[in-house]
Length: 318
Ligand code: NAP
Ligand code: HSE
Image (spheres, rainbow, N blue to C red):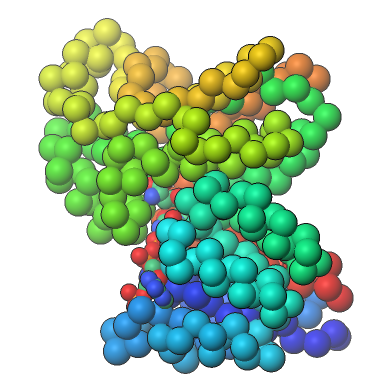
C-alpha cells in the first residue's frame, strides 16, 4: 500500500465538519477507493475555542496547516475571496493540491487559480462548488466536444427551500431561518436570496462548457426578496410554481445568463423540487438533452463531492 495522504482542512463549519466526520467514519471505504489511506491532519478555524462536533486538532493560523509537511492536500471550506484566495495560492506555492467548495472564489478568480495550479503542477478540484452531491462539474467536462444550447435549472438549495416552504404556508423569513438552521444557506444569506450564489455556479458551468472564463458579473440577477405569499398562491391557481431559476442561453454570438424567480409547471422536475434539491438540464447539439437532479446543499451532500475529489487526487498520485 502506498503512503498515507495527509489532508489539511481550512474551515470546520457545516461542510468542514461533515468532511472531518466522514473521513473518520469511512476511513476503510475511502482507503479502498483511493488505493491508499487518507488521514485528516488538522483544521484551521476562526475561533479555536468554539465547541466542535468533531475531534480534530484546530489552529487559528492557516500556515500551521499549509507548512505542515504531512499535508499533501488542502481542503478549503472557509468561503469568500479574502483570505481564501491567498491561502489557495500559498498552498500551490508549497506544492499542495487544493479541493474546494468555494464557488465565489472559483468563479471570481477563475484565471488566477487555474494558472496557479498549472504553474505548480498541482490539482485544483471544485466538484462541490456547484450543486453539491450532483457530479455536474465532471459532467460538464465530459461534454467538451458538444455545443451547449441552453443550461437551465435550480442551482441554489436555499431559494428552492424558501419557495417550496412558502407553498406550505411558511413566511419568507421563517423559511430562510429554517434553511439557515439546516446548514443550506451561505454565511451571509443575501448571497442566496439576492442570487450571487447561483450566479457563481452558473459562471463556473458556463466557463467549463465554453472553454473560457464566463465572469459572474455577466450573470443578470434579480432578488427573491420581492416574492410574496400572494404571488405563490396566484401561481398555484394557474397550476404553476415559483422557482429561483438559473438560465444560460449559449447563443450564436454571445451567451446570456440570468438568475431570478420564474414560473414553472407544478408537475415539472423544477416544480416538484423541494428543500435543497437542485436540478440541471443541459440542451446540446450532439448529446441531446441531459438532466441531473439531487441534493445541492448541506454538509453530507457537499462532503460527498469533496471526498470524491480527494479520492481522485489520491488515486492519481499513487
Ligand atoms: P460555515 O459553516 O460558515 O463554515 C466556515 C468555516 O470557516 C468555519 O469553521 C469558520 O471558523 C471558518 N473561517 C471563517 N473565516 C475564517 C478565517 N478567516 N480563517 C480561518 N477560518 C475561517 O460555512 P459552510 O456552510 O461550511 O461553507 C463553506 C464553503 O462551502 C463556502 O464556500 C460555501 O459556499 C461552500 N458550500 C457550502 C454548502 C452548504 O450546504 N453549506 C454547500 C456547497 C458549498 P469558525 O468555525 O471558528 O467560525
Ligand atoms: N447556499 C448554497 C445553497 C449552498 O443554498 O445552494 C450550496 O452551494
